[in-house]
Image (cartoon, rainbow, N blue to C red):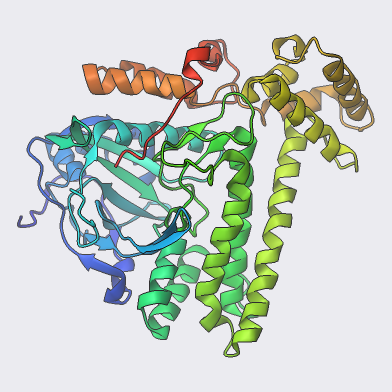
Length: 491
């Protein structure tokens, strides 16, 4: 299809810095046209923050852009090349069904990738059709916006446009294109690709680009590539801790799904944990539990070690010295993660300061929750509002004893009871995107073209720490019959 320039004044302000990297890293190409583009959902608040006109993008011309039928002025579409370890096995990957339109420069001078997901086949499709089904794209929209509201670094969703064409999976499903917004789509897998198939100059160009784009203020007095590794480790330690603190399970932590920006990326088989259990897995393809909730910190460390391996040629001319530098950096991850997690857990319990016994207090609570099948989110919510009777452990002797120890700990700190309560309110969400509620919204949208259920869900998820009456119904855990929930990659 010949690229057609759109004439609407949508506020696009593109730069294309990724396209100035060596051509090894991408293939320039346009999206495939769709039959009948129509806007399904649109994120007005996100559009405004990007300097984009919601009115223009909600028009027919805007829908044509967001479905890939028109190329906005200044865009330079390309498919990114990368590799990755998928469930521990290395393979060539790349954007098989996505195109980077370019980077939107906002009125505040910030830079964000604008990517179309489901925009057709690319040279990296590996036999796939390059398309996406409506349900999984709406799912990414819901979960990514919920993560943003929870205060967790994430890619965002600007819009989902339907295509008027079916995609064939196990059955025919309505097709769609998601417009994804990201600080960048640079991944651990991008560096794995460079290390395997690029030259030393290609690898250095990619590393320098990543430093400039994401860590321009990092201390560059020392070894700049050790600095890069350290900065990525810091961001991942913070990110994974935040996942654990809200019970989020990514589901497919392959190295191509670890963004160097520190954002959560790729919402395929993800879900939120209801009953607390570290072995919880939702993904239908994770039969061995590699990416279970309790394994996520360990997998993050493993992925970061793969990233460190790609940087060895840049860190030092002597391989042994480079390995020593890399190992020193990677060894910091566990401590950084643990520090973030422990601080977050203290906040969830209203604890200020530090005492040596804090960690055992936290672990005792989690062990009780697992033993008694307690709901993770609602247990902390009940503690926040001093309603211990609202959890599955309330009538046990061990919980009574734990509660007394917790109250004694709070009593030893200088901060007031009101301060502890406020800390807990701001650290324990009233609601998460419960899996059964997400499925309810997707079924209404996909099968009945009723987006009202999804819109109401998104509205209550906008401020998960509000603890408002409107959120009460959405805080209820699923019925027992829904607790065998399974998710799918949605490709």
